[in-house]
Length: 368
Image (cartoon, rainbow, N blue to C red; front, side, top):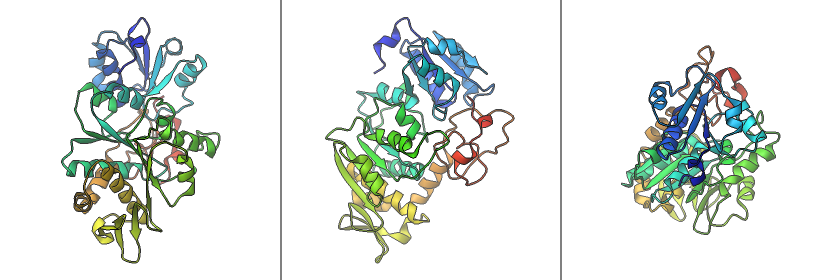
């Protein structure tokens, strides 16, 4: 639930007015919290909703600027996905020791007690495809499920609309994990690890440390779906309470690829032939195995997993092209809209090549 202290005389600041920031502002206002919401861009992605926000009681908006004095005096700061950690409003909040929470953390707290369960997906690569596959397989099993987080809907929006989903498949980045102290997924997937976002992290160790926060609130009933081919992934999860389910492209595991038979397997049981998967590349075999293990833990039968995996191509394609813009590009940004593969960085919605986003990030294209 929303912290009761926020309903007092203080103000909660929301940084970024894309879909996540708009949903967070509306949710807080509904809960009786006074909100200061700002975006450095003159044209936020959530611009069409701003007039409605202005009419909400207790909400003050700033478009085109951030009032750092207000932010330093806030009871808490809610940060939209894609706002970089070094952005001035976040630096001001840290300097004033104001708690910073991700929109995902806010939405997760608001959903507490609703009965909605969560499968979180993180890792350096494959997050979006795996999240889309998880949501697809859950729906195919007849479960009321949705993709959320970095793709699909903001968690705050789901909480706001009182949608009674049984399961959410939530893509979550290292930055979001850093600012999500209450996030506790029932099932977590760690797809892989590789040095990334080193323009924002002092070292690869710092980047991996944020990925490790997936297990911050691990409990004995939680399940962790891990890449068994990467010692670094297994080391990161070492000591986390809960049960492990490993996937592998090299050897028998809970979910694995039998290269000789060209077949995906769940334990000792055949799942489907490689040719039936319809996704190119070994990395997508790994993504499919991770998704299959996660939804099996959610109660989906192998027969449903196999049948629905045969049409996984459309689900994965939809996931890669429906990422929500996290920040607001300047109107003079030179980047073209991106409709292909994506990552969790702030440039994900504004790239024009397959070059990793962290190499193409431009402060001109991030509305902070």
